[in-house]
Image 1 (cartoon, rainbow, N blue to C red):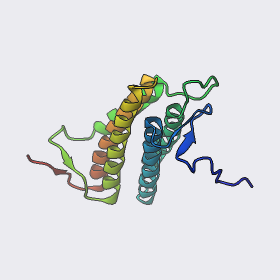
Image 2 (cartoon, rainbow, N blue to C red; image 1 turned 90 degrees about the vertical axis):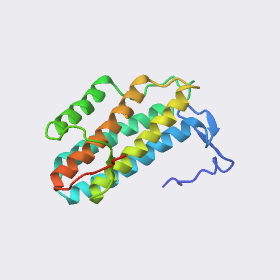
Image 3 (cartoon, rainbow, N blue to C red; image 1 turned 135 degrees about the vertical axis):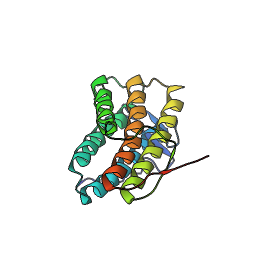
Image 4 (cartoon, rainbow, N blue to C red; image 1 turned 90 degrees about the horizontal axis):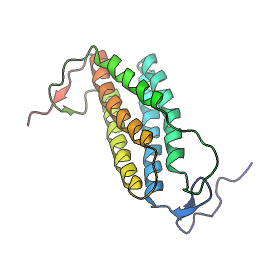
Length: 183
């Protein structure tokens, strides 16, 4: 069995896909690391959903987890990489939109900003949403300096919308009253 450690990062650098070594705080590493964090939070959300027997949500989130690995890979590409690696395509963004539309059909119209809470499933949706928004901000920083496929940004932006809608959908299915901020 190969060792998990290589010692090559002991001085604060890591390799991008393609071999380029960069600092571990390089914006690209920050961006794909935040997407990785989001994937871990989505895994926990999936665990909570499976305990509540929300099979449709688990299936949706399992697909998202796979697509997030593609996003991570896209963000980890060095500019000199010449190989072939999966990409996000427009149909994946449209799939997110269709899930948002489907869940929104039974939701009341927007009444104000939601205060997270009410159930661990709902709260975890909001944690995922906020980490997703942070990933989006990190990707914007990367895009100022390096090429980033615009579909990556579109996917992450739409995913945060899906996670917000999912929080409302879960509240409705659980019979929980959403707490609204009244400013």
